Length: 568
Image (cartoon, rainbow, N blue to C red; front, side, top):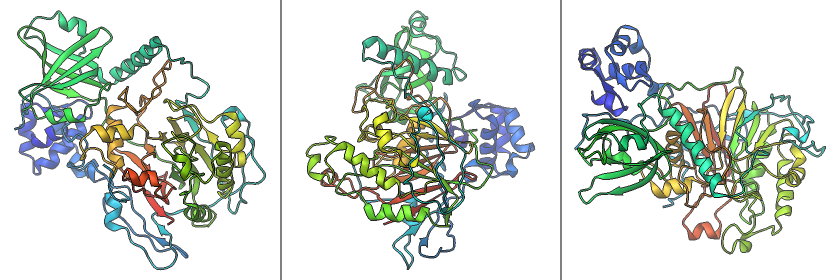
């Protein structure tokens, strides 16, 4: 039973008996949970399917992706070290090891440079060049001409010469606010955005609970069973150490009490204001509060199966280039661009850049003292020159970040036509932040990652930290929203729909912003924070940020295995 509850399941008594009598009860319980999928109650039928239906013959999902790195043969001129993306779902590293426990299961800053815990254990430098390969790669060709109607400028004749035969299909882009923004900042527009957020996230939870509106629960007699879906309006502790979580739906608010001795009580530390939750429980005798027996997040289904490409092709995932800064890692960028021209990089046909192309102007105090280029347009012209070094036959997709010359409030529209014209050298595609970009059938949720600062500040270090930025990303996947908390540092623009909701489960979640490298898998979604191309600035030094720069995660789209190359 412990194995089931650790994965968020309750079980029928007969199912528990069947699993306990299996040859390997722990493996049987895991297989039964896989058979139950999103049912959250393991039945005797699920147990029999696990025991008699061959599920025990398959490796558990948590073992489907090897944790051990593999090391390919070194390529000429570079020391190659390849690592598959580690799977952090083995239990202790799961951001919600018991995220949806049911009734009856009561229980009694900025670190040093890191390439993620998994990399730091096995990273080596071979003799030869200063490039450490954690990936394998690609080739190149020549740009194709399209119009600005699909988010692309006209191609330039000055792009890097093609040396290969890349001809990648065009990416598909969804959930892009560009050209769709209607908000003017009126109060009613914010109400509409949050109404849309609630409706869509509640839709993900309605299959798990029999939702009653807050207004209806308020009129129910004491002692009644009650279930509700709402946005977190307030979180406070009682004098006895219990927790009261106020949930709000479209009809009102209702207080929910989480007793400190419940097995799921530690999950209160994971909660953020304005995220969507579902609770089940019993009303107090006076009907004024609900005693919570279980809580549910929208989350990624445990049964999620990612898509893969039907041919061997790769994508490079990078972000935070910061051209214009005195600390722009020019030599590392040049090595990266040169490597993309080699036969070794023949399969790298896509370059996905997650924001902050330039350093920007006036982003933080005294930034002008750290600028190599002080004019914002000149910064983008210099970035365009760097982009020309990349092979001209690659498909490039770019989203903006908080240092870029677009509005700071999210969702951020793509770059303006003026900036697109400046960056026209590579015929790149420009889309908003966030956007879902599908390449070769693989969906990549691209989000710059500004909200990660807030998640890391609010949650316990073991759940979210700069040392392991991908774990903060797990929390966003669990909440199915890239910036759940409103009113903090992350600014939100009111739109007719909440573009920050994660409607579709992506195959890959790609962010940047925090300048730290980390990756892992959450419910089979690969989460990647790709580091940066900027060495430590004086400002970063003053706030103890030691960046991971000069890394290029290389994703095999046909297997979703990921390797990382270092160009420093």
